[in-house]
Amino acid sequence: MIDTHSHIDAEEFQDDVEQVILRAKEAGVEKILIPNINADTVEPVLDLCRRHPGILFPMMGLHPEDVNPHKIDVARTLDHMETLLKKEDNPYVAVGEVGLDFYWDDTFRTEQIAVFERQVEWALQYHLPLMIHAREAHDDIVKVIEKYHDGSLTGVFHCFAGDERQACQLLEFPGFCLGIGGVLTFKKSTLPVVLKKQVPLERIVLETDAPYLAPVPFRGKRNEPAFVIETAKRLAMVYETTPEEVEKVTTDNALRLFSKIAG
Image (cartoon, rainbow, N blue to C red; front, side):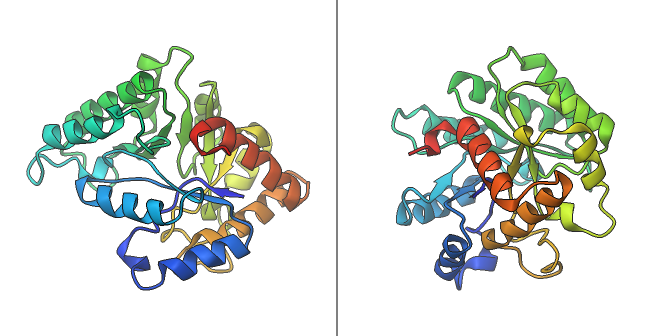
């Protein structure tokens, strides 16, 4: 299995990250992808990934919630991130975590959209997939991707929890998958019905978004990559197949999307 989105560099793991990685391996997780979210995470993410080559892989991006010109020099941050992406031997496997988030506050809507568009341009220029965060911003995300999509854009719509209409819209972009995590296992989740009706398993990748959104039976606890198996089990029920088949198909999907992690 591949956990395509996990924040195990976060402070929630500072005391036991090595044990967390060991438990992931024991659960059958072969690779874990770690997004950057701001300038402060760049070095910690790199350091963690260097300690676990072939298992942990970094992404590069500015999270929409960190797009606050009152707190950071946004242009300078983006310039620094792009400088790292320009290096031929850079380790980054995707542009992420990027996107739009208007859930708590849309004060910087215009700035968020501009930052997202620049990072979509990085994906095109440096031939990397996108790891897209969208919260209360589905239509705006679609507009941006439509603007830039020339058939070569690829990536993941992270933490998908939308309805059938939204799923169909996102699947119209070839080369993109939906990132499915713990929300699928929640008692009141409508995702099982949406996925079964509209989304082929070949368009899904597994993720945890650890330490957030732990699946049942761990809901309310700190999430970690080992728990991705619970999402795989629930997907097997949705698609009336085996967990082994879900693991195989979603792993193949991830390896196809994130070509730099293969091998």
